[in-house]
Image (cartoon, rainbow, N blue to C red; front, side, top):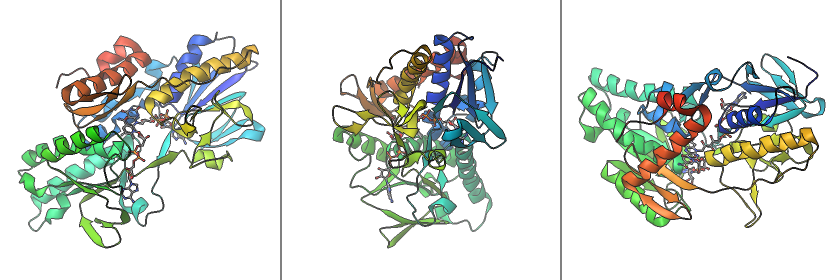
Length: 403
Ligand code: FAD
Ligand code: NAD
């Protein structure tokens, strides 16, 4: 490749990184810039499907796409390596196995699970963090059921699955478990009453701050399918086989998963970016303050809504929209033109409650429940697959099967 061209380096092949790379290849001529995409693995995964991988309700491979299947390696240099830190003063990125120089940098490294320093959480709980961590959860749950079946004096609590945190991730995960656990009970000939799914939330209600009617719907639907909720129950410690609640009560389980919060990728801190709650508060052009040539996107960024002074919700639809603004603004910098501000187009929020149930809001707060909401969720999932890889990818990885 011609090294005299300006080099754009994109860090992270999640929603923001993949779509930025794709948009850059559409908006720039190959002669205008060299594009480099750096990612830990040679695959891109659907972070929004990780709870399904963790419960084992979809195959791991359905949630993964080989990057070279959707990004042309002749057009974009693909580097499969882990980012260690950004050396802003030197315009270099340190990787586990080398270094890269950049002229323009896009930091799109996603989230990391936040344990808020809760004693024992890091050591004893599983996290819904990436494909590998979720595959381990699925394998561990299956192992608990197989072991129970084979051991004479197996303890009933080994079948319990504890999920700490009743935000969107925790609720979507217990929705998948409500489908998977009865199947495991049938497979291993276990009385379903012995396998409990327990969600523990510190706030007075699960999904704090979300629409009350929709939350009530979710709680009832999941309870009817056997999920137990402990609301107003703060987890103060995680032991090898238990959560300690409100410093006094213990709930035991064979599988413990923490979905109690996320923060920006730790590479941001390692690189000396100024952080607010683990993320960079970016300019409305998505540039890092004081760094014209660095854009920070997706779950690494707080993008402020000027109307209410609060950050936009960090989610996949935001990350995908950041990509378009970022690509436009890099093109503008290359052409010496003025940059555009990011404007969030909120299409609503839908949370799945298993394969055939969901709830959420679309189009200016219209509430959706049940199969209609579940269909909408599939439409959203499939729309992204189509945007990323067209009909060919949709046929391979899309959610095509009816309920
Ligand atoms: P990600 O998509 O997480 O991508 C980050 C990428 O960076 C990954 O490929 C990772 O491998 C790579 N990476 C990380 N560290 C390094 C490193 N050091 N070196 C190299 N590469 C690295 N949002 C919605 O809008 N709708 C939903 O329905 C929804 N459902 C969700 C369900 C779950 C279970 C979870 C956890 C989140 C969900 N979200 C949803 C939120 C959404 O997934 C995130 O906001 C979104 O993934 C952010 O995109 P991103 O590009 O910033 O990061
Ligand atoms: P979150 O921060 O939204 O929820 C974490 C939950 O854990 C909160 O309800 C919090 O009160 C609870 N919690 C924290 N500490 C606790 C403790 N000590 N004991 C008990 N409970 C505790 O995190 P999340 O659910 O992982 O979501 C992360 C982001 O991803 C959010 O922005 C969310 O909107 C997004 N997301 C969106 C969807 C969707 O749109 N369908 C699905 C999943 C995640």
